[in-house]
Amino acid sequence: MTGGNRGIGRAIAEAFVANGDKVAVTTRSGGAPDGALDVRCDVTDPAQVEAAFATIEEAHGPVEVLVANAGITADTLILRMSEEDWSSVIDTNLTGSFRLAKRAAKGMLRLRRGRIVFISSVVGLLGSAGQANYAASKAGLVGMARSLARELGSRSITANVVAPGFIETDMTGVLTDEQKAAIKAQVPLGRYGSAAEIADTVLWLTGPGAAYVTGAVIPVDGGLGMGH
Ligand code: NDP
Image (cartoon, rainbow, N blue to C red; front, top):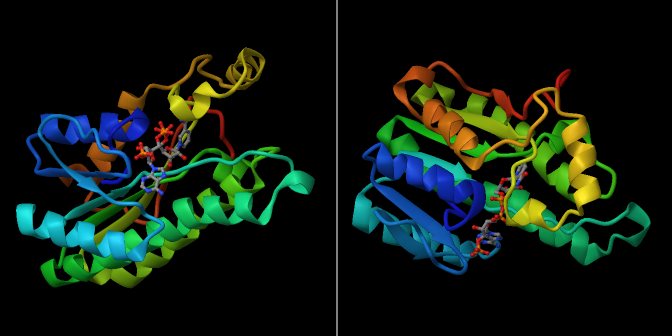
């Protein structure tokens, strides 16, 4: 899985380790949780993605589960959004996930089984002022997952999307108290989510109980995105 050193990714990695799985965590900066193989990989670099898979396959064998979680924001209103704001977010969140899924699918097709999970966001389908780049990248994951579900389904490979709502991590730590309160006021459950709640959903999607779930978008957002 990618981005497993902090935030939502760390909770997912810890849940897999606690489940007794062989886990590899890729990040740019290191710091995988105990019990996980710590691999450096910037998902914007195809050569690093290839090298990371080679390292992981050598240590752990074929990759049966991919969780594409690494993501960034570069929020600003559309008239101020630079080419770099746009392309860096698309390259990391969407194209990075494409690179990972393509490489993972190669091994999964041979295995004739596999689980691919993309970590999207409630704003992918709801939209969010100041996040045109981010929302586009996260909506793109839905189209990609559903296409892969159709392409790879005959080999027992599933492709699904988890769409978290507001989770307190470094990413949302940059928001002002006012912004946080405004978001919370729109959440029917009246609270932020925890990274562990996203991890629980990912564990279910990659476990035996979700073998017949593919092409799905699973919201874990306290009801924020209802109506998708
Ligand atoms: P954080 O900012 O806490 O962590 C981001 C992670 O992504 C880090 O592990 C970081 O690794 C990794 N990462 C970023 N860029 C790259 C890159 N180019 N190559 C490899 N790794 C990279 O984010 P969150 O935990 O909050 O978010 C995780 C995912 O969940 C993201 O995809 C985010 O969009 C999504 N999400 C988050 C929500 C929230 O409320 N927090 C809501 C909805 C979706 P490093 O430390 O090495 O930089």
